Image 1 (cartoon, helix red, strand yellow):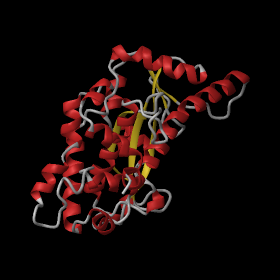
Image 2: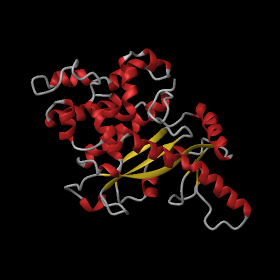
Image 3: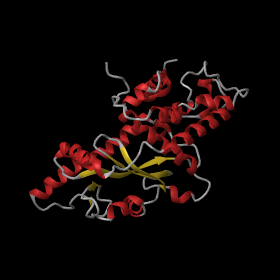
Image 4: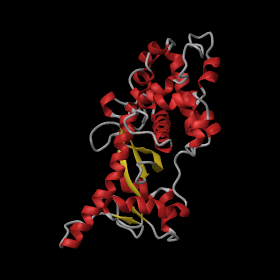
Length: 301
């Protein structure tokens, strides 16, 4: 069975891993750490030997969890594809998710020495200076929770986790907050996160761009409501054109990891497990960007 059919856009990353750590290290990502985070399939299969789990030779890609991230759907279907029991799929998925989440090295807010390069990248989009990130929230659908069900109902009428993220001009996430239920307002999430306190110290002459759902601050610029002159209209055009990066990041992430997209239904887990899966997918979203792989899922010739 073709890797891309089973694992989607992440298939060629697995192939690169199978070829060794050299290609990974060449990208700037520590190869040994990458293998430790991703290549855990053999250990999980050893745990479930004798319980219907494939051997490593039968299952070269090693990570059924990646198939769930990439395609979503039902765990029983995933078990049929890999020839393992649904209960084994659950345990493998949990191990895979925990390993990725605990690594937590693929998403980091830029240090001051990187601010100039980030600002230059954003400036090339629409001429907006001193911008190091664009911030917004997105709703990830989950199944109806057993506890506190009402707080997870978002403004669109379904149960969700409201995820805040900051991205750079390369569509790479540099900060995420994955813990708030769907009914939480975007501004409340930002007001209660460490990033606000970090930027509020006033040590850095940088800006984030956000939509009108946020309050305008010295470090967070929002659009002008009801622009009264040409300068304000130009500001809004540049602001919207630059801030569009975060919308594209969300779209690209959900297209790579269909388990996050409402077209596949929802995450059929508790909020706590859903939060881990969302975090893992957002981390893995950065990996093809770090490896400079094309968005379409095919390596350039």
